[in-house]
Image 1 (cartoon, rainbow, N blue to C red):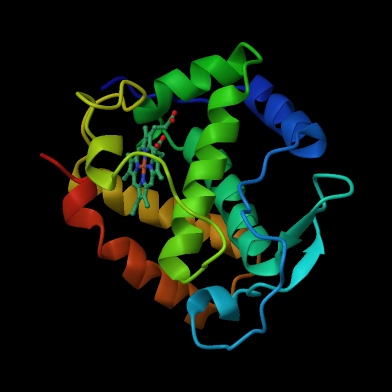
Image 2 (image 1 turned 180 degrees about the vertical axis):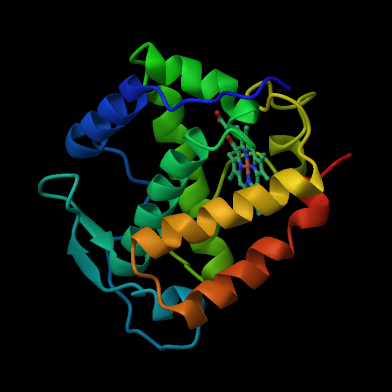
Length: 189
Ligand code: HEM
């Protein structure tokens, strides 16, 4: 796997533009539910609806917004991380050319996956299984299988993404446990 040693400025510019102007949300219910405080998703903000800061006029659940912020920050960190950005060559080359469709899909899919994994009920993940998403034979966007060291790097980038968004350490620990439970599925060599 070829490692990329720089973060294309075009990536930052293009993604920032996308975040400011695009409309994409997979919420399938507009009815807010009472917060119970029992899931990690609830602790991250839960189902309370707030204005979506990047989609004018749209509302978003506070928990999903918190997770999306962490995911988008993490994708930026990964893009600059030469330990693992070589797995994301398809995505990075698209974004460098100004094609943001793959970034939008990844942000959406990762956000929905993590929302569901933390207890969200209003968003349904319909992307690839974790096995298929990380097997180059079934996902041509995955450049090479991930190693356990890659997984460690991914986790450290996720921590950086969470810290950029001031996620409290106890919630980050809970998220870490969920992520760790997927190691043996994501790492396939
Ligand atoms: C628990 C940790 C992880 C989770 C929850 C996760 C989740 C996901 C999800 C939901 C997708 C989108 C699947 C789809 O398009 O249907 C995806 C794609 C991908 N993942 Fe992961 N992933 C994890 C770890 C990793 C690691 C360690 C690597 C490699 C270092 C990696 C590399 C990729 C790549 C290259 C893609 C394709 C990106 C694209 O669409 O351009 N992932 N992952």
